[in-house]
Each structure stands twice: as structure tokens, then as C-alpha cells.
Image (cartoon, one colour):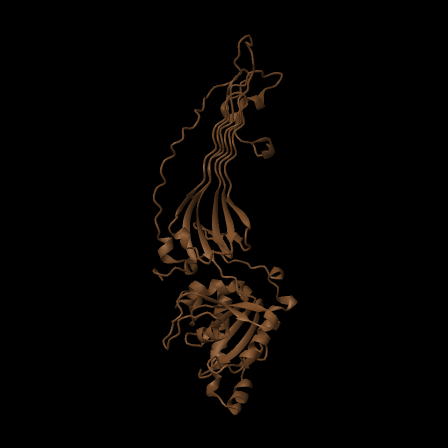
Length: 398
């Protein structure tokens, strides 16, 4: 996996910009001995913004861009001159990216649509200049607000592929063979377990120039929800699938038992997966005759549609596409009606090499901050009395 270009999990350090300090300047002009305060406001700090890009399919660019820092706001100056706002940083990510707090594992946000922008970290507000604090009883306020500090946070970005149908099955169940038969995708196919090392997407053509997307993930084994095998790392990709297609080979010792094991692993990973439409397909059915098919059909569960297919001979593939299309277009199966509840990251759902990544200390800021003075005005108020107040309207600040 280290040499693969498909990266679906990355840990980065983000920091928004700090707000610029307000100015304590007084108007100075010839023949104007008491011009009054005219210190401008500080500029706001830059935001960290995530933007969806439908042309991206991996988080590979962020694997080599571990530190993302926005620009700081500049301080205000005399003449009510406002400081310049810090530069925002827009990070393009694939559609289907989910963001978690790296420290707590809590879900933060997600980006699902092309062009969608999500403000991950908000830049600090700029401080108000001293001209905001003048009044009839305080003609010469010699204080101004400092800018709000920057927000620094380590986040984990997970990519969950957007597909209509997700293939679920044990290793060597025929998932990659089925995907190659129904679409133009060419996943690696071999006669040993875990041939598929990363998710594969294929576009399946249907009648009247219609199509749907099918996703193949590495094989799932019993205990995958606890970290066994490769399936755990890629189970996240089927959370966005509208339909789950379970594949069980015809030569399995207990077809119904293997289906129950797969279903149990999905439930342990995310109980919400139990609400998705499910279809059971018995693969490699070219080894069966009509009598065996009828006998096996009586043993299959009644609560899920099932059919027999063979990706090699093409048997049952047309009926399979009809059944999948009917489930995808079902009004009760719309993703908008079933929002995904993203489970927090825990020890089982983290990628060890990413969590052990050590962030280097960020370089010290080179911009000088405006010196803060500690004194009291004629009313007896100190600088601490003019720190940020949440009731101040942000629209009053540039």
C-alpha cells in the first residue's frame, strides 16, 4: 500500500490566521491640536477552506502537504486604515471526504459535492481600533483590541468513495471478476486471497444509455470490524453506497452462514449499514446444475432478494443489472433521505502509520505583533477590560 497512488486516509496539521491588532493612533495635523482617535481595525486572519473536486479520486496531494497554514491579518493604522485580511487557503479534496479531529476522533465535517466549500478552521477576527471606543466621557481612548489568536488543529481526512453499488464478500468470492465483466474496469484478478488491495470503481452500462457506478473493496473476513484482514480499512467506502451486493461463491460450505458473517461484520462496523438495500448473488454458478440451484435456493434467507450468476459465462448478469437498477432508483433508497452517521474514529479504525506521523515544529512567525500596553485610562479601565466580547457584531469588523 505504500507504493499505491490511492490514498484514502491522511493526517495533516492545519492552522488558521490570527487577527491583526487594532491601532491606537490619534489624528495629527497642523492647527488641529486635539484631532481625536483614528486608529483603524486589524484585518481578520485567513480561513482554512475545503473544496470538493470531482476530478480528484485520491488524497495523494495531501500526503506530501502535511502543514497547511493560512495568512495572518495585518494590524490597523492611523487615519482609520484597516489592516489587510490574511490570505485564505483553499484545499481541494475528492468528493466524499470526511474530516475527523485527530486528537478525539470526533466527526467534524464532510465534502460530498463538486465545488462545495466547507470552512474547516475560521481565521481570528481583527481587533477594533481606538476610534470605536470614543464617547462623550472618554474623548481619548488609549487602548485598542488585540486580534483573535489563530486556531491550530490536527485533523484526519478519510475518503469514502461515492458509488451506487458496493460489492461485499469474502476473498476469492469473484468480486473483481464480476466488476471486470460488467464494466470497463480491469482490477487485478488472481487465484489467491486479498488480490484486491485497494478499492476499484467501474461504470456499468444499462439500457437506454443509462449507467451506474459499482465499487469493489478488498475481501472481508470474520473479525474485520476488529482490525483483522484488509477489509476494515476499506469498509468505510461502502457507507456511501446506495445498494450492497453480497457475493458468496457457489462452492462455499455454508452460503447462508457466510452471508450472516458478512452482515454481522458490517453491523459491527456501522449499524446504519443495516438500513441499506441488500442483494445476495451466488457467484460461480456455472458449476451448478438446475437441481442444485433449486436446492440451494431453498436454504437462502427470505428477507433479501437473491439470484445465481456467473461472471465467466455471463449467466444471470442481465437479471442482476435489472435488479440493481430497480434498487438504485427506488424512492425509499435515496441517499438524501438516509444521511450517513459517521462513527468516531477509534483504535480499530485508525491507520497506524498515519497516527504515528510526527509533526515538525512549525516555523516561527516572522511578522511582528503590535506591542500591547498595560495602562489605565482616566476612567480607570485597563487593557484587559477591552478584550474580545462575543456580543460584538462581526459585520462591524472588516
